[in-house]
Image (cartoon, rainbow, N blue to C red):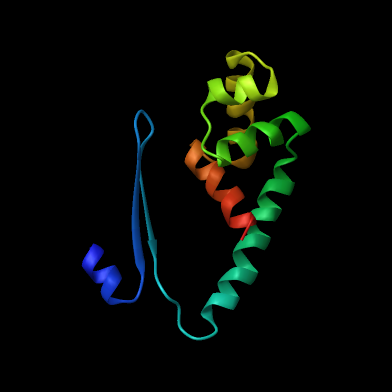
Length: 114
């Protein structure tokens, strides 16, 4: 697969995080004009999803930590909360965003940031 992506002019990245799993990112070039269409559509969709979720300020702070790849313990230390409270916020924001994993929540933020 790596060779096929490279042959198409793309990039293949693998990120292994012990205890979290493996993230594989394949970046492929789009046809002329395609990049603008994707850039215009995806951030707006993600932004809308986050807005519709009506996350409170603390949930947004926790979501920011998730998007930066922090674990609950690190988020708790940064926000001066208990790890249990962070778990509570993670569970709530996942439900509000309509996603089933931290990775999906982080992807919404990454797409929103362009």
